[in-house]
Structures are given as structure tokens and as C-alpha cells.
Image 1 (cartoon, chains in turn purple, cyan):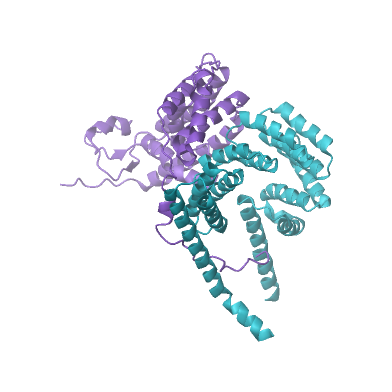
Image 2 (tube, helix red, strand yellow):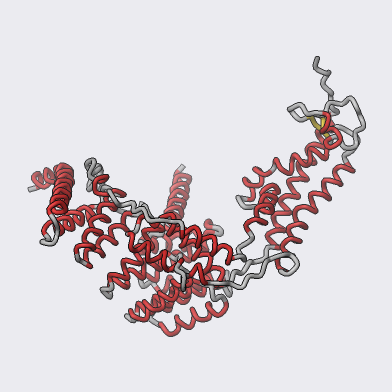
Amino acid sequence: MDEPELLLDSNIRLWVVLPIVFITFLVGVIRHYVSILLQSDKKLTLEQVSDSQVLIRSRILRENGKYIPKQSFLMRKFYFNNQEDGFLKNTKRKVVPPSPMTDPSMLTDMMKGNVTNVLPMILIGGWINWTFSGFVTTKVPFPLTLRFKPMLQQGIELLSLDASWVSSASWYFLNVFGLRSMYSLILGQDNGADQSRIMQEQMSGAAIAMPADTNKAFKAEWEALELTDHQWALEGVEEELMSRELDLDGMFSKELPTGIF
Amino acid sequence: GHYCLDINVLIIVFTEMRDKLRKWREDNHRNSEQIVDVGEELINEHASKLGDDIWIIYEQVMIAALDCSRDDLAWTCLQELKKQFPGSQRVKRLAGMRLEALEKYEDASKQYDSILQDDPTNTAARKRKISILKAQGKSAEAIRELNEYLEQFVGDQEAWHELSELYINEHDYGKAAFCLEELMMTNPHNHLYCEQYAEVKYTQGGLENLELSRKYFAQALKLNNGNMRALFGLYMSASHIAASPKVNATVKKANVKYAAWATNQINRAYQVTKTNQLPVEELLLRSS
């Protein structure tokens, strides 16, 4: 049997639901502009740029080496991998692992990241929880289990209340993630207000920000290239080409474009 | 009534011009005369409506103006950009390009050197210095500098292509082929690189190179059925191999077959054109 639906005071809608949306949105926009101001330019060294391009070239050789003649492939493989002076085998770079302790710029970056993203979220979440407490704000459209009650119904001590009814703090967090698409519309892609994207980046950033370990990258590339053989893609190209007539539709039939428009 | 119509037409024309410029910018077209025509009018008549787009349009129009020897227009654009972005390296490079256009190569070179002092990774400045050597006809030096550049920036495709052209001019076909191989690997679906590679191989000559050339002409055709040069190349390389006294009977037979197929396709292509030209012939008949 469905419980009778709670009827919320419409003042809640006017003075709680809408203001929270408004506040979240504004804070997001402010965060975006602050992150632009605080942006620090990452200067890559010449060597880093160069090395990353070399790694790309080696990868391309592995993937697309089949489009060049066998001799050419072998010549390049030799250049990279040969025992005596192969580039990947013999180039050693000085590696400074970028732990937050030793690399001051990483430390400031991390701090800036935290200040602009996590801190406001916590502060404002707490403030909203304090200001708009003691009542239920909204109902989520799907049923939740009782386990969610203490988390989503902070400040409402009602044992029998359906867990789908949530407090203002929950509504705030819903907004933080939900307004993402609004931010993209208004601030364009790649905006600094996009909380979930930033958190994703922080997680994957930890994995990607290992460019400093070039030596490991070289070794991995060396191994991969050793294993690569040349399978020439052009082996039967004439037969493939001549298996059907050429598609000559539209040849020479287009008028030359005249004028500017 | 009448006024509204005129303003609407002006607005439509303005947006079309701006969009055309953007399209040319994105496609990297070098139709400099058109860009100068459209861009000059846009800048003179509609500057206020362009908003922040105007800066990139200034850059685009300036480069086009240099191509057309319109130093007056180039100077105007440069001044606007200097005012808006003082100390910018991108603007400094444009100033250098203008000096190049005026053939003041020493001054241009100094300009680029100052950019490189601030930012040694600035590839644009290094490439402009190489262009200066090329413009001065110092091919050997240009080739040497470009090789050094490519050692550090091995992924710069524009540079590989430039180097292949320089080598072809010096008749160093082996090295040109190397450059084109780099391009084929990074752009495996580009039929033009396959065709150029095939042409270099054909020029190098010798049975092995002719075989390779025939294969790569075929590949170019496979990627783009409409590449007539590749079709002719296929015919010529196959015929050459078939005519060579050094090949055995099987190889000769295969190449004769390839050449025949190519001839067939060439005839088909020209049949198609013949039917398309019919109206023109009728026109000519009528007017006489």
C-alpha cells in the first residue's frame, strides 16, 4: 500500500529549492573564473617534447610500418632497437620522480586544485546543511533503501520517513553534478566549474602524470618494437585493385567553382 | 520597407563573408587574393561586428596580404595586433614574416632569434628561419637545418614534407623517399603521399624500384580511384617492367596484364569525359 504522499509547504520550493540551484550555479561560475586566474603555464623542456615525439614515432612504426617497404621498416627498427646504439636501448634520461615533496610546482598545483574545488564544495555544503536544516526538501523519483537515510536525511530525525525524501544538503550535491550540462552550455567545453570532470581528471591525472619516467617508456617501446614483424600491406595490392573496375563517377564532370560565394 | 531589406542583405553578406573566412582558415586554404578581398572589406566595414574574431582574422588577412605584396594592408593588421597583444611571440613571428616578404632577411632572422631566446621550443620560429634559407637559395644549408630540426621534432609532418621537396630538388631521391615513408606511416590513408612515393621510386629507376613504384601507384589508386596520375603511373611502371630484358616470363606476363588493365581504365575515364563534353560541343556548333 502506498504511503500517503507528503505535501510540502510551497515556501520550501520558493525559498529552498530554487535558492540552492541558484547558489550552486553561481558558485560554479565563480569557480570557473577563479580557475582561469590561477592557471599556471606548464613549461615543457625541449627534451621532454622531443622524447614524447620519438615515442609516438616508434608507436607509429609498430602500427603502420606495414605500409612501407620491408627494408625501410627494418632500417627503422634497427635504428631504434639495435644492441650497440639503438635509440630506445641506449638513451638514458635523468629522471626526477615528480612526487609532491620534491617538485614544488606539483605541490602548488595540487593545493590550487583543492582550494578551488573541494574546499568550496565542503564549505557550501556545510553551510547549506546548517541553514536549510530541519525539513525535507525534495523527493527523489526512485525508491531508496533505509541505509541511505542517515546520509541523505541529515538533520531530520524521523524513523518512519521514506528514504526517498531528502534534505537540502542532498539537493545541493545533486545540483553540483546536475548542472554540468548547464555549465557546458554557458561557459563552453573545458570549463573550470565542471566538478565531476575535474575529479575524473584528478584520478586519471595521477596515472598519466608519469611522463617523467621516460626511461620506462623507452624500455616498454623497445620491447614492443622487438616483437613487431613486418607484414607488408601491399603484398596483393594489384589483385585487390584490379578485382573490380575503377569508380570513375563524377570524374571531370564538376564545373570549376567560380567567384567567391 | 526599403531600409529593412537593405540592412538584412548587409547582415547576410557580412555573416557569409565571416564564415567563408573561417572555413578557409580551418581548411588551411592559401587563396590569398580572395582572402585579401573578403578580409579587407570585413575589416574596414564591419570591424565592430566581429568581436573577438577580429584578431584571428587580422592574422589570416595579414599573411594573405604578404602573399599579394599588399604591405599597406599587412602593416595595418600588424599594428592592430601589436597594440592588442604586446610582447606576444605569435605577433613577433608575423612581424618576422613581413620582413621576409620585404626580403629583409637579416632583420627577419634577428626577429626569430629573439623569439627563440625566450622560448627555445618555439617551432614556428625555427621553421621560419629555415624558410629564409630556402628563399635565399641556400638549399644545402636549409636541408641541414631542417634535418637538425627534425631530429628534435620528429613528429612534425609539415617539416618532413618540406624536406622531401628539398631533396627532390637536389635529386637526392633516396632521402626524399625516406621522408615520404614517414608521411605514409603517419597518414596511411592519404593517396597523395603514396603517389609521390611511387613517383620518386620510378625516378630512381632499376627493377626493384620500378616494382615498388608500381605497387605504390596501385595503392594510391586503391585509396582514391580518381587519381589519374597514379593510373598513368601504374601503366608506365608496369609497361617498363614488362619491357625489361631482365625479367622472367611470369613476371612479364603479370605486368603486361597490369598494363592492359590500366589502359582499359584510362579509356573508360576518357569515355566518361567525352559524354560530359557533349553539350559543350553542341554549343560550339550552334555558335558557329
